[in-house]
Length: 313
Ligand SMILES: C[S@@+](CC[C@H](N)C(=O)[O-])C[C@H]1O[C@@H](n2cnc3c(N)ncnc32)[C@H](O)[C@@H]1O
Image (cartoon, rainbow, N blue to C red; front, side, top):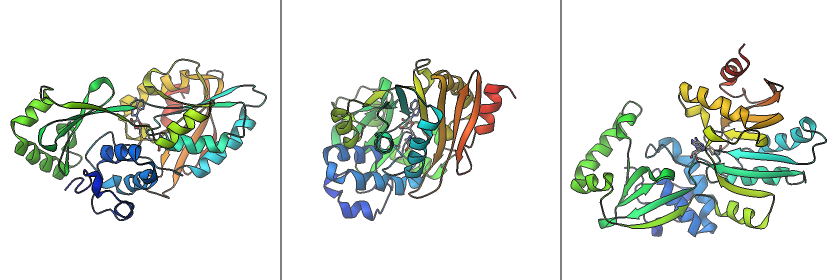
């Protein structure tokens, strides 16, 4: 069953996180992580370990501390080489989820005193609406309904789209939805009465860093509408690889236009499971052209696509 036993915070222990029985409820875990910083690293690791089994939400915050250790060090080495003599450098880690990997990156680059860093994600706050009988509806940025969470289960809202990908989960959630009956309809139509609670999706460590360090800040930002010429280094990890081609093609120009002249675009994925290898490409915007200047692993999986699309070769 999806998320069994973990919707109740009393059941979340360090031991439970170390030896997970079932996939966690991502949002519950993050909510708990916010209230219990002592547990948060274990919780994030737990999400990382279990996420391949978790089909409960398209928006699961799949990230964990230390995910890009080597890449972070490489970026710290590349900045002085590729952006020499610049008095002020802005680095934007976009699609950063709870921004724990941004905290890691900041630790790796903080000795470069001219660098300021922004970590952002589209979803930065969720609203959890407590309904009757322990059911909750989870709304994202733009108040879109993401999940319906019940005792021990998660109903993803976009059931139709999930059928081909995961028929068994689709079937299970349909059965559960049927069990919910009219209440499901009320929730889906937004008329079920309930109490709203805001859930901050940034990791407590990211919040603490942003409070104490003026060079590190947290924002809400959509990759498709980043301000033009706003950043020297833009990193987007583990976001585009799941997007359909037509959406990737749409977002490339937005990412490239967000760069200042000579800026660096870092795209990649990896660390899907803890310690699984990371792949990335660092591109530099030279005039109008995008030039790959560094790679790790096998490079960004859509490197040729972005180059062909942007450089027209
Ligand atoms: C798998 S997480 C990646 C987190 C982190 N970058 C990492 O690699 O560990 C993907 C994140 O991309 C975010 N995302 C999806 N579409 C986005 C968009 N259009 N703009 C900004 N963020 C987006 C999701 O909210 C999610 O938090």
